Length: 114
Image (cartoon, rainbow, N blue to C red; front, side, top):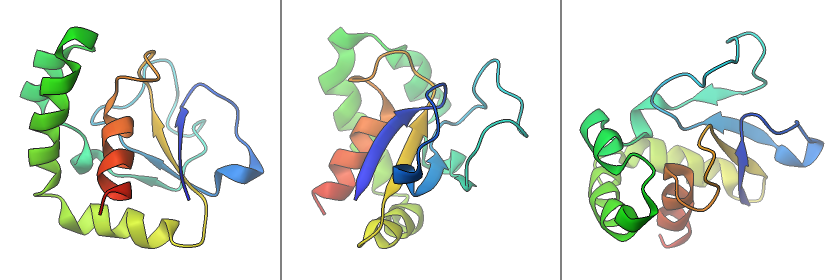
């Protein structure tokens, strides 16, 4: 089962495998302090797409379309997440303040739709 969680939220046993899906390391957290199992920075939106979106909710639908196209080129990482989540909890970690408009939401929707 895929779950989503901000990197700033507490760790839970129900998290299962914890995978950071941001392209840049989260602000204010030392690498040794973030409890995570993997960092799939290559699955994050391209720098150009991330900068264009800038967490602007008005651009959300267009961001999702563009990012879904990018995810089609990340089959290896998408498949790894899907396999890990088959019968197990996997939590996708992200740093964005907006819990509804971020790349982890798109990744989850993409994988759930496969």
